Image (cartoon, rainbow over all chains, first blue to last red; front, side, top):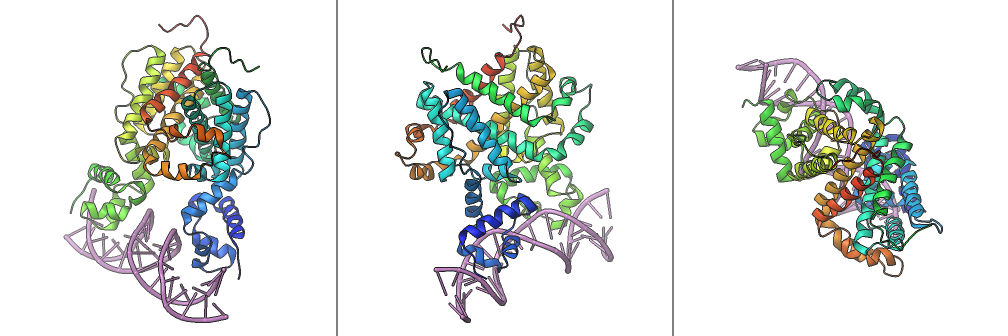
Length: 204
Length: 204
DNA sequence: ACCTGAACACCGTTCAAGT
DNA sequence: ACCTGAACACCGTTCAAGT
């Protein structure tokens, strides 16, 4: 059997969908490719390197947004990142285990910071606000992709007397409407960013 | 050798500090306790159960905040959660691998939602805004605890021509001042929450 | 250049048997 | 009640040897 790097990457992403991140092993991957255990190591020098390539593959095209006012651009980039992570099982966890410096991730970071600089933020505020946006996208999406298990255990654990406030909000946590939940948090953050945009830099 | 549940938990947290989450194995833990591999399984039915107990142990006392205006209380809770996660190596990753329904985590969630309900938010907005705050704390702290490796690889990967905006902000990402970075994002989120507090509910 | 075969040094978990 | 000893079914990684 003869395989190339792209085939390994594609097979790894397919195996991710089938088995999930926790069951994704180099040995199962080799078997799926019809090859011996050691063979994939010629194409990726470690499992970590493969996971990084997978993470960046997920982000293909995420940074390609058109001309928009800064706040709509920030929102669009966040939404595109979320959709990209949702496209594969455990996509958000794969991405968060890796985080930065591969091509598509860099393009995303560059586009997001660019929108915030254009809004009039300092480089520092732009970088930090970009992180806040990305933290929300990734953390929200991780929870969204884990959600299946959560609700029953939580309902059983919350004592209305000991945790009255949590109990009052229990119908909304974890959210049965992840899409709205996502937008709510993103709107909050963009509203917060807007408060630090200097006056005289209106966006629309 | 005779051990009890508390000793296993304490030894696990010490091993976490020494070895880090990735090197924390049930076998190393047994060895540290001077006991055979199977022995810890009498006290915790799985590694996952042990990690959950560790996560909740980290959060001891986090919810114990005094009477404060709602926004100061939200800020205080977030800061206390961050400090609790920073207290042990990889604390944020341990917590994020587990997330909810143990006693100290429930107390934290209850206190945070309580502050937001008192601000005048609906249960839904309170629950969702609480999640946004917690996402920020956890994601920020994970990155803060990983930081050692990140900066050089990133500097090498950013091409000033291809990523001009990212390049302009490179001194701030990853942040050399995690404390300020944390407060910046938290302030943003609290400012965003303030925009959805109904009028006639001033807090100070 | 790219794969096989086989090994090394680990894992989490289970469970009969002991005390 | 709590631990030992030993096994089961896995891991990631390396590397001489083959083609």
